[in-house]
Amino acid sequence: MQYAELLADPVVRGVTVGECVDGAEWGETADYKEVAHAHTRSTHDRYVGHICVKSWDDLFEGHQMRVSAVVLEELAHLRADAGHTEAWRREMHKLGVSVPPMHRKRKR
Ligand SMILES: [Zn+2]
Ligand SMILES: [Zn+2]
Image (cartoon, rainbow, N blue to C red):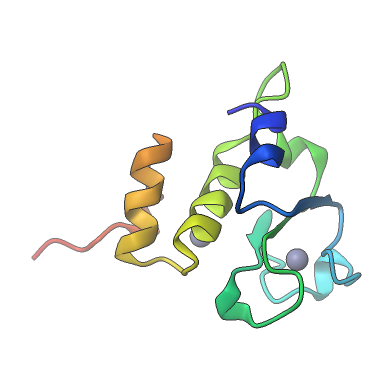
């Protein structure tokens, strides 16, 4: 997906790079170990629809403004308005992104 397409997505209100949209430095955010996070409605803050990314390198994959898989994962969170749930997995599938192993459903 192109960056322009991401920004045009109805669920996306904005993308912030290098810090959180709420002004917190990356190291102060709850998910500071991740390279990106999304503000879903379930976070109950006024930045719903924002995706925050640690750096420009984490935002893009290769050339031509293609957004990275981690950012698509955050888009899936916004679309599902949820954490790592079944609804989120479905959105990941629609976006054609593979679900990271740690968030796969465990088979018994
Ligand atoms: Zn943020
Ligand atoms: Zn996630």
